[in-house]
Length: 116
View (cartoon, rainbow, N blue to C red):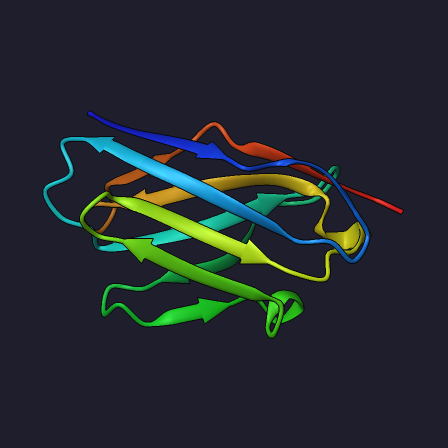
């Protein structure tokens, strides 16, 4: 079993920054992909940033230039630094881990609210 625990959400002023963390634990025998997703109220869940199976990084267009994703492979922890926050960044942010193709795990999410 794998557990993912996100932290770092909260209330942030427009223009501010945040750093989200995702701590992975349990039977992590491999990491095929690891990502951050978010779901805004009334919208579908969308990919924010992630590492693909080759370790390449991808960013969703609206966060390019504002986001930095990183990973500590020893601690099995993933981070998301997001700067210059705006109202459209308000969402629940989820950590996603794919151990092998099709073997997906999700965290419970951390809420980020950007105050105007």
